[in-house]
Length: 267
Ligand SMILES: NC(=O)c1ccc[n+]([C@@H]2O[C@H](COP(=O)([O-])OP(=O)(O)OC[C@H]3O[C@@H](n4cnc5c(N)ncnc54)[C@H](OP(=O)(O)O)[C@@H]3O)[C@@H](O)[C@H]2O)c1
Image (cartoon, rainbow, N blue to C red; front, side, top):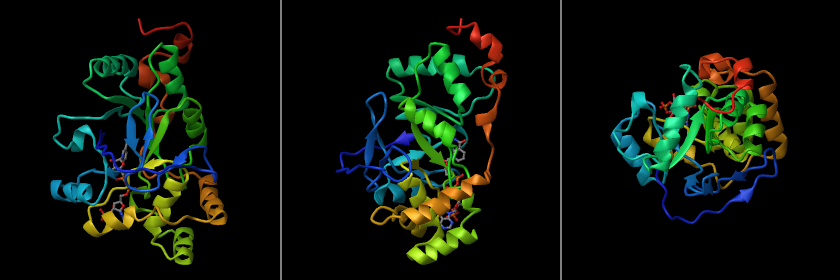
């Protein structure tokens, strides 16, 4: 992840509706991570986006760009480095190496992605630092309340990915009804839901016009009643992508739960 932080004014209020987290008030809003570094609270997912579109997003005020190794931005500067998923059997070793890179200043902040509670607890049990961020799939059909609550209790910031469910839910009947009532687009309802839940969110679009539409989610809000209707969609969980948060410890760290119990470090 590349987070471009400027010194723009940022107003943050406490979210009283659903989660105990601050709410972004503009594209320039920032918050502090548990390592003291400030992070923009709204960003652009850049999966397969081209350079001019990304340049245009920065011009329009977007201040965080989420990227990955297989669609990277060809940059040599990274603010926040995320360990992509609890898989490969070497998460402890990889995380420890990244921690060293943070200490040496190569990485400013360190986080994880797609980590479940058991993975986060394992990092702690192994004597590794807590991540600053956990990036997970997040939209009304993926509330992941247990992970969100656990992360909040440990001061780990949640970044929600696929806030538009990869575009698969912009024609959902409930979303359309709420959009019509509030005179917003379905995409804006989904993105505002994330913002209003106190999540950092990174909607992706390849369209210039939608860059602005998707960022026009700050000077209005979804009434409590409609928030409850949206939250209720999560009672029937549905995922638009993979879900490695459920991977077992063996898959993530290369050893069993039982073995973890007997360890206090990686070695
Ligand atoms: N850590 C992980 O494992 C992981 C996994 C998945 C994604 N991510 C990150 O999260 C970012 C966002 O997630 P995502 O790309 O999966 O999906 P998303 O942001 O939920 O949805 C993107 C889709 O929604 C469409 N869309 C965007 N704005 C719209 C609008 N206003 N109206 C109607 N449709 C609209 C886009 O089409 P158009 O381009 O035509 O607008 C695109 O097809 C990714 O780019 C990536 O950076 C991370």
